[in-house]
Image (cartoon, rainbow, N blue to C red; front, side):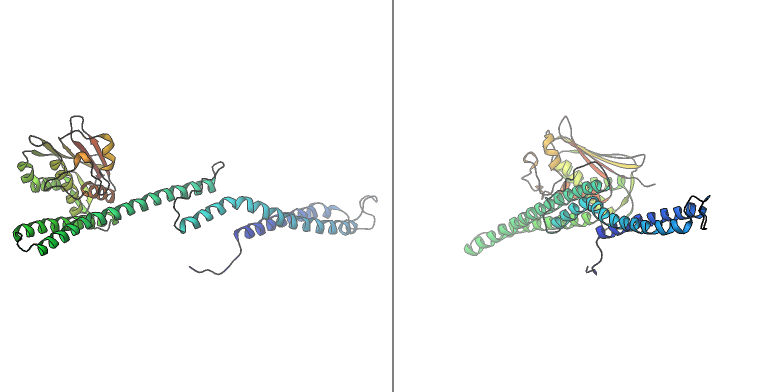
Length: 359
Protein backbone atom coordinates (compact mmCIF):
# COMPACT_ATOMS: atom_id res chain seq x y z
CA UNK A 1 0.00 0.00 0.00
CA UNK A 2 1.26 3.55 -0.65
CA UNK A 3 2.99 5.29 2.24
CA UNK A 4 4.31 8.79 2.75
CA UNK A 5 8.12 9.07 2.60
CA UNK A 6 9.86 9.19 5.96
CA UNK A 7 13.27 8.99 7.56
CA UNK A 8 15.29 5.85 6.99
CA UNK A 9 15.99 3.51 9.88
CA UNK A 10 19.71 4.21 9.52
CA UNK A 11 19.15 7.95 9.92
CA UNK A 12 16.84 7.39 12.88
CA UNK A 13 19.42 5.20 14.59
CA UNK A 14 22.14 7.77 13.84
CA UNK A 15 20.11 10.58 15.39
CA UNK A 16 19.33 8.35 18.35
CA UNK A 17 23.03 7.55 18.92
CA UNK A 18 24.05 11.21 18.57
CA UNK A 19 21.22 12.38 20.80
CA UNK A 20 22.03 9.81 23.47
CA UNK A 21 25.71 10.77 23.39
CA UNK A 22 24.85 14.50 23.63
CA UNK A 23 22.51 13.92 26.56
CA UNK A 24 25.16 11.81 28.30
CA UNK A 25 27.74 14.60 27.78
CA UNK A 26 25.34 17.25 29.09
CA UNK A 27 24.62 15.15 32.19
CA UNK A 28 28.34 14.72 32.78
CA UNK A 29 28.89 18.46 32.55
CA UNK A 30 25.96 19.04 34.89
CA UNK A 31 27.48 16.64 37.39
CA UNK A 32 30.82 18.46 37.16
CA UNK A 33 29.07 21.77 37.70
CA UNK A 34 26.94 20.54 40.55
CA UNK A 35 29.55 18.63 42.51
CA UNK A 36 32.76 20.54 41.75
CA UNK A 37 32.18 24.17 40.94
CA UNK A 38 29.71 24.75 43.72
CA UNK A 39 32.49 24.11 46.30
CA UNK A 40 34.70 26.78 44.74
CA UNK A 41 34.36 30.13 46.63
CA UNK A 42 32.75 32.90 44.71
CA UNK A 43 35.03 35.73 45.90
CA UNK A 44 38.05 37.63 44.70
CA UNK A 45 40.50 35.67 46.90
CA UNK A 46 39.56 32.24 45.69
CA UNK A 47 40.21 29.18 47.83
CA UNK A 48 42.81 29.99 50.61
CA UNK A 49 43.99 32.85 48.46
CA UNK A 50 45.79 30.60 45.99
CA UNK A 51 43.02 29.03 43.86
CA UNK A 52 40.93 30.75 41.18
CA UNK A 53 37.42 31.71 42.10
CA UNK A 54 34.20 30.39 40.55
CA UNK A 55 33.95 33.24 38.09
CA UNK A 56 37.32 32.43 36.53
CA UNK A 57 36.61 28.71 36.41
CA UNK A 58 33.31 29.28 34.67
CA UNK A 59 34.95 31.62 32.16
CA UNK A 60 37.53 28.96 31.28
CA UNK A 61 35.24 25.91 31.68
CA UNK A 62 32.30 27.07 29.56
CA UNK A 63 34.14 27.38 26.20
CA UNK A 64 35.84 24.03 26.71
CA UNK A 65 32.50 22.44 27.58
CA UNK A 66 30.90 23.91 24.45
CA UNK A 67 33.72 22.55 22.29
CA UNK A 68 33.40 19.14 23.97
CA UNK A 69 29.64 19.09 23.37
CA UNK A 70 30.09 20.00 19.72
CA UNK A 71 32.71 17.28 19.34
CA UNK A 72 30.41 14.73 21.00
CA UNK A 73 27.56 15.70 18.68
CA UNK A 74 29.67 15.38 15.52
CA UNK A 75 31.28 12.19 16.78
CA UNK A 76 27.85 10.77 17.59
CA UNK A 77 26.50 11.57 14.13
CA UNK A 78 29.48 10.15 12.22
CA UNK A 79 29.99 7.17 14.48
CA UNK A 80 26.26 6.47 14.69
CA UNK A 81 25.94 6.56 10.89
CA UNK A 82 28.79 4.06 10.50
CA UNK A 83 27.59 1.78 13.29
CA UNK A 84 23.99 1.87 12.06
CA UNK A 85 25.16 0.95 8.57
CA UNK A 86 27.11 -2.01 9.86
CA UNK A 87 24.25 -3.14 12.07
CA UNK A 88 21.65 -2.85 9.28
CA UNK A 89 23.77 -4.50 6.57
CA UNK A 90 22.14 -7.93 7.17
CA UNK A 91 18.72 -6.29 6.93
CA UNK A 92 19.69 -4.93 3.53
CA UNK A 93 20.48 -8.47 2.37
CA UNK A 94 17.14 -9.70 3.65
CA UNK A 95 15.30 -6.84 1.91
CA UNK A 96 17.07 -7.59 -1.38
CA UNK A 97 16.17 -11.27 -1.09
CA UNK A 98 12.55 -10.34 -0.34
CA UNK A 99 12.38 -8.19 -3.47
CA UNK A 100 13.88 -11.03 -5.51
CA UNK A 101 11.30 -13.47 -4.15
CA UNK A 102 8.55 -10.93 -4.79
CA UNK A 103 9.58 -10.87 -8.45
CA UNK A 104 8.99 -14.61 -8.68
CA UNK A 105 12.48 -16.02 -8.07
CA UNK A 106 11.91 -18.45 -5.20
CA UNK A 107 15.22 -20.28 -5.70
CA UNK A 108 17.24 -17.40 -4.21
CA UNK A 109 18.61 -17.94 -0.67
CA UNK A 110 20.26 -15.46 1.69
CA UNK A 111 22.58 -17.95 3.43
CA UNK A 112 23.85 -15.24 5.78
CA UNK A 113 27.23 -15.95 7.35
CA UNK A 114 28.34 -15.16 10.88
CA UNK A 115 27.35 -16.16 14.37
CA UNK A 116 23.78 -16.55 15.49
CA UNK A 117 21.88 -13.36 16.30
CA UNK A 118 18.47 -11.86 15.57
CA UNK A 119 19.29 -10.98 11.97
CA UNK A 120 20.80 -14.40 11.24
CA UNK A 121 17.77 -16.06 12.80
CA UNK A 122 15.50 -13.94 10.62
CA UNK A 123 17.54 -14.79 7.52
CA UNK A 124 17.49 -18.52 8.30
CA UNK A 125 13.73 -18.40 8.89
CA UNK A 126 13.23 -16.56 5.62
CA UNK A 127 15.35 -19.13 3.77
CA UNK A 128 13.29 -21.95 5.29
CA UNK A 129 10.08 -20.17 4.27
CA UNK A 130 11.35 -19.73 0.71
CA UNK A 131 12.29 -23.40 0.55
CA UNK A 132 8.83 -24.50 1.68
CA UNK A 133 7.15 -22.00 -0.62
CA UNK A 134 9.21 -23.14 -3.61
CA UNK A 135 8.37 -26.76 -2.80
CA UNK A 136 4.64 -25.98 -2.52
CA UNK A 137 4.62 -23.99 -5.76
CA UNK A 138 6.43 -26.77 -7.60
CA UNK A 139 3.99 -29.29 -6.13
CA UNK A 140 1.02 -27.20 -7.24
CA UNK A 141 2.48 -26.84 -10.73
CA UNK A 142 2.99 -30.60 -10.98
CA UNK A 143 -0.51 -31.16 -9.66
CA UNK A 144 -2.04 -28.77 -12.21
CA UNK A 145 -0.08 -30.37 -15.05
CA UNK A 146 -1.02 -33.89 -13.96
CA UNK A 147 -4.66 -32.95 -13.42
CA UNK A 148 -4.81 -31.39 -16.89
CA UNK A 149 -3.28 -34.53 -18.37
CA UNK A 150 -5.67 -36.82 -16.49
CA UNK A 151 -8.71 -34.76 -17.50
CA UNK A 152 -7.55 -34.51 -21.11
CA UNK A 153 -7.31 -38.28 -21.48
CA UNK A 154 -11.05 -39.11 -21.10
CA UNK A 155 -11.99 -36.09 -23.21
CA UNK A 156 -9.64 -37.24 -25.98
CA UNK A 157 -11.08 -40.75 -25.79
CA UNK A 158 -14.62 -39.37 -26.00
CA UNK A 159 -13.72 -37.30 -29.06
CA UNK A 160 -12.12 -40.32 -30.72
CA UNK A 161 -15.20 -42.47 -30.08
CA UNK A 162 -17.49 -39.79 -31.48
CA UNK A 163 -15.30 -39.38 -34.57
CA UNK A 164 -15.38 -43.14 -35.13
CA UNK A 165 -19.18 -43.21 -34.74
CA UNK A 166 -19.57 -40.33 -37.19
CA UNK A 167 -17.36 -41.96 -39.82
CA UNK A 168 -18.87 -45.44 -39.35
CA UNK A 169 -22.66 -45.15 -38.85
CA UNK A 170 -23.02 -48.94 -38.99
CA UNK A 171 -20.97 -49.42 -35.82
CA UNK A 172 -22.73 -50.95 -32.81
CA UNK A 173 -24.29 -47.99 -30.97
CA UNK A 174 -24.72 -49.95 -27.74
CA UNK A 175 -21.00 -50.61 -27.46
CA UNK A 176 -20.28 -46.96 -28.25
CA UNK A 177 -22.65 -45.70 -25.56
CA UNK A 178 -21.25 -48.15 -23.02
CA UNK A 179 -17.67 -47.00 -23.65
CA UNK A 180 -18.70 -43.35 -23.59
CA UNK A 181 -20.49 -43.88 -20.30
CA UNK A 182 -17.41 -45.56 -18.80
CA UNK A 183 -15.15 -42.72 -19.94
CA UNK A 184 -17.60 -40.10 -18.69
CA UNK A 185 -17.92 -41.83 -15.33
CA UNK A 186 -14.14 -41.83 -14.94
CA UNK A 187 -13.97 -38.11 -15.76
CA UNK A 188 -16.71 -37.36 -13.21
CA UNK A 189 -14.93 -39.43 -10.55
CA UNK A 190 -11.70 -37.59 -11.24
CA UNK A 191 -13.41 -34.19 -11.01
CA UNK A 192 -15.12 -35.08 -7.75
CA UNK A 193 -11.83 -36.34 -6.33
CA UNK A 194 -10.11 -33.08 -7.31
CA UNK A 195 -12.87 -31.03 -5.67
CA UNK A 196 -12.66 -33.13 -2.51
CA UNK A 197 -8.89 -32.78 -2.44
CA UNK A 198 -9.18 -29.01 -2.85
CA UNK A 199 -11.78 -28.81 -0.08
CA UNK A 200 -9.69 -30.80 2.38
CA UNK A 201 -6.58 -28.74 1.54
CA UNK A 202 -8.43 -25.52 2.37
CA UNK A 203 -9.74 -26.96 5.63
CA UNK A 204 -13.06 -25.10 5.35
CA UNK A 205 -15.33 -27.62 7.04
CA UNK A 206 -17.41 -27.75 10.20
CA UNK A 207 -15.92 -29.83 13.00
CA UNK A 208 -17.97 -32.24 15.05
CA UNK A 209 -17.30 -35.21 17.28
CA UNK A 210 -16.70 -38.34 15.16
CA UNK A 211 -16.05 -41.92 16.27
CA UNK A 212 -13.56 -43.55 13.91
CA UNK A 213 -14.86 -46.98 14.95
CA UNK A 214 -18.33 -46.18 13.59
CA UNK A 215 -16.83 -44.65 10.47
CA UNK A 216 -14.72 -47.78 9.90
CA UNK A 217 -17.77 -50.02 10.28
CA UNK A 218 -19.73 -47.92 7.78
CA UNK A 219 -16.88 -48.00 5.25
CA UNK A 220 -16.42 -51.75 5.70
CA UNK A 221 -20.14 -52.40 5.25
CA UNK A 222 -20.12 -50.41 2.01
CA UNK A 223 -17.07 -52.22 0.61
CA UNK A 224 -17.90 -55.73 1.89
CA UNK A 225 -19.46 -56.81 -1.46
CA UNK A 226 -16.25 -55.81 -3.26
CA UNK A 227 -14.16 -57.80 -0.76
CA UNK A 228 -16.41 -60.86 -1.11
CA UNK A 229 -16.28 -60.58 -4.89
CA UNK A 230 -12.49 -60.81 -4.72
CA UNK A 231 -12.50 -63.60 -2.16
CA UNK A 232 -11.03 -61.45 0.62
CA UNK A 233 -11.74 -61.37 4.33
CA UNK A 234 -12.58 -57.93 5.74
CA UNK A 235 -12.40 -57.55 9.54
CA UNK A 236 -13.09 -54.49 11.72
CA UNK A 237 -11.69 -54.68 15.25
CA UNK A 238 -10.90 -52.40 18.16
CA UNK A 239 -12.87 -49.92 20.22
CA UNK A 240 -14.10 -46.33 20.16
CA UNK A 241 -11.69 -43.69 18.89
CA UNK A 242 -13.26 -40.26 18.95
CA UNK A 243 -11.87 -37.22 17.21
CA UNK A 244 -13.05 -33.82 16.04
CA UNK A 245 -13.56 -33.15 12.35
CA UNK A 246 -15.74 -33.57 9.30
CA UNK A 247 -17.67 -36.84 9.30
CA UNK A 248 -17.92 -36.75 5.49
CA UNK A 249 -14.18 -36.25 4.95
CA UNK A 250 -13.22 -38.83 7.56
CA UNK A 251 -15.59 -41.35 5.98
CA UNK A 252 -14.00 -40.69 2.59
CA UNK A 253 -10.56 -41.12 4.17
CA UNK A 254 -11.41 -44.51 5.69
CA UNK A 255 -13.25 -45.62 2.54
CA UNK A 256 -10.22 -44.82 0.39
CA UNK A 257 -7.92 -46.72 2.73
CA UNK A 258 -10.15 -49.80 2.86
CA UNK A 259 -10.78 -49.75 -0.90
CA UNK A 260 -7.07 -49.39 -1.54
CA UNK A 261 -6.38 -52.33 0.77
CA UNK A 262 -8.95 -54.45 -1.10
CA UNK A 263 -7.87 -53.53 -4.61
CA UNK A 264 -4.13 -53.92 -3.99
CA UNK A 265 -4.33 -57.38 -2.45
CA UNK A 266 -3.84 -61.01 -3.33
CA UNK A 267 -5.95 -62.41 -6.18
CA UNK A 268 -7.79 -64.59 -3.64
CA UNK A 269 -7.58 -65.62 -0.01
CA UNK A 270 -6.22 -62.28 1.20
CA UNK A 271 -7.26 -60.29 4.26
CA UNK A 272 -7.95 -56.68 5.16
CA UNK A 273 -7.93 -55.62 8.81
CA UNK A 274 -9.26 -52.31 10.10
CA UNK A 275 -8.45 -51.53 13.74
CA UNK A 276 -9.39 -48.50 15.84
CA UNK A 277 -8.31 -47.57 19.35
CA UNK A 278 -7.68 -44.59 21.62
CA UNK A 279 -4.13 -44.13 22.89
CA UNK A 280 -3.82 -41.42 25.52
CA UNK A 281 -4.46 -38.18 23.59
CA UNK A 282 -4.63 -39.65 20.06
CA UNK A 283 -7.19 -41.73 18.19
CA UNK A 284 -5.61 -44.40 16.00
CA UNK A 285 -6.95 -45.99 12.82
CA UNK A 286 -4.87 -48.81 11.37
CA UNK A 287 -5.56 -50.53 8.04
CA UNK A 288 -3.46 -53.55 7.04
CA UNK A 289 -3.73 -55.86 4.08
CA UNK A 290 -2.02 -58.79 2.51
CA UNK A 291 -0.57 -58.59 -0.96
CA UNK A 292 2.62 -58.51 -2.91
CA UNK A 293 5.69 -56.94 -1.26
CA UNK A 294 5.83 -53.16 -1.62
CA UNK A 295 9.30 -51.72 -2.36
CA UNK A 296 10.32 -49.28 0.42
CA UNK A 297 11.40 -46.66 -2.13
CA UNK A 298 7.86 -46.65 -3.56
CA UNK A 299 6.14 -45.82 -0.26
CA UNK A 300 6.99 -42.05 -0.07
CA UNK A 301 5.46 -41.49 -3.53
CA UNK A 302 2.12 -43.16 -2.81
CA UNK A 303 0.58 -40.04 -1.22
CA UNK A 304 1.52 -37.77 -4.14
CA UNK A 305 -1.34 -36.92 -6.52
CA UNK A 306 -1.44 -39.00 -9.70
CA UNK A 307 1.67 -40.95 -8.67
CA UNK A 308 1.05 -44.64 -9.22
CA UNK A 309 3.86 -47.12 -8.71
CA UNK A 310 4.13 -49.64 -11.53
CA UNK A 311 3.78 -52.44 -9.02
CA UNK A 312 0.43 -51.07 -7.88
CA UNK A 313 -1.21 -50.01 -11.14
CA UNK A 314 -4.57 -51.67 -11.76
CA UNK A 315 -6.00 -52.29 -15.21
CA UNK A 316 -9.43 -53.52 -14.13
CA UNK A 317 -12.57 -51.58 -13.28
CA UNK A 318 -10.96 -50.28 -10.07
CA UNK A 319 -7.97 -48.64 -11.69
CA UNK A 320 -8.67 -45.39 -9.86
CA UNK A 321 -7.43 -41.92 -10.69
CA UNK A 322 -4.28 -41.83 -8.56
CA UNK A 323 -5.79 -39.61 -5.87
CA UNK A 324 -6.86 -42.15 -3.22
CA UNK A 325 -3.94 -41.83 -0.81
CA UNK A 326 -3.42 -38.19 -1.79
CA UNK A 327 -6.93 -37.45 -0.52
CA UNK A 328 -6.23 -39.49 2.62
CA UNK A 329 -3.05 -37.51 3.25
CA UNK A 330 -4.84 -34.21 2.69
CA UNK A 331 -7.73 -35.13 5.03
CA UNK A 332 -5.33 -36.27 7.76
CA UNK A 333 -3.31 -33.08 7.45
CA UNK A 334 -6.47 -30.94 7.58
CA UNK A 335 -7.43 -32.70 10.84
CA UNK A 336 -4.00 -32.05 12.41
CA UNK A 337 -3.06 -35.72 12.29
CA UNK A 338 -0.24 -37.89 11.00
CA UNK A 339 -0.18 -40.60 8.33
CA UNK A 340 2.34 -43.46 8.35
CA UNK A 341 2.75 -46.02 5.56
CA UNK A 342 4.91 -49.06 6.29
CA UNK A 343 5.44 -52.07 3.98
CA UNK A 344 4.64 -55.33 5.74
CA UNK A 345 7.45 -57.94 5.71
CA UNK A 346 5.04 -60.63 4.51
CA UNK A 347 3.60 -58.41 1.78
CA UNK A 348 1.00 -55.71 1.64
CA UNK A 349 0.92 -52.35 3.35
CA UNK A 350 0.20 -51.08 6.84
CA UNK A 351 -1.36 -47.63 7.08
CA UNK A 352 -1.70 -45.87 10.45
CA UNK A 353 -3.66 -42.66 10.95
CA UNK A 354 -3.28 -40.73 14.22
CA UNK A 355 -5.73 -37.92 14.95
CA UNK A 356 -6.17 -35.75 18.06
CA UNK A 357 -8.47 -37.49 20.53
CA UNK A 358 -11.55 -35.83 21.99
CA UNK A 359 -13.38 -36.99 25.14
